Structures are given as C-alpha cells and as structure tokens.
Length: 81
Image 1 (tube, one colour):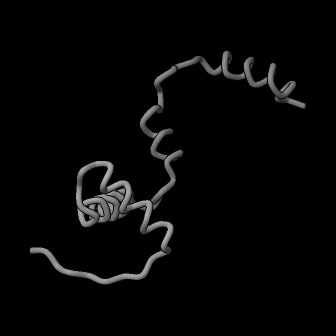
Image 2 (tube, one colour):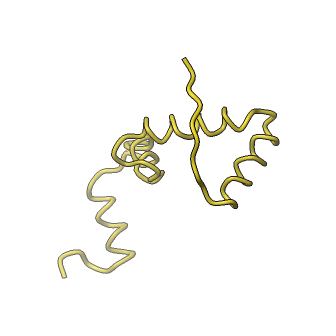
C-alpha cells in the first residue's frame, strides 16, 4: 500500500533531489523513498558513513600489535611518554 504525504523542505535540497531523479531517469517519489528507507535502515549511526566504512573494512589489513605500535611511534613519538 502506498500513502500520499506532504512535507516542507529547503528549496535547494528539493532542487537537488529533483535533478538527481531526472539524471537517473526515476521519479522524485522513488528517490525520496529510497533515501528515507536507507536513513531508517542505518540504525543509530544514521548518516555517519565513517562508522559504516570502519565496520565494513574491519580486519582488512591485519597487522601485529607491535607493528601498529611502531607506526604510531614514528608518527607521534614514543607512546610511553
């Protein structure tokens, strides 16, 4: 079932959404519906792409703790200081 809704939004945001819909050959309803679904599905970290990126890449480059420590010390100086 679909429901008609009414809302108020910033004119510039509306224009961006409308242009994106035209660019993709889709309706504004599809663009806004997809954006809202994505926003609701992301949970407590809504809109924070860094959290999703970190989660998706976790463990991609496994490094032993001593190597990480060495790299950090080279960047910032001794960690024990």
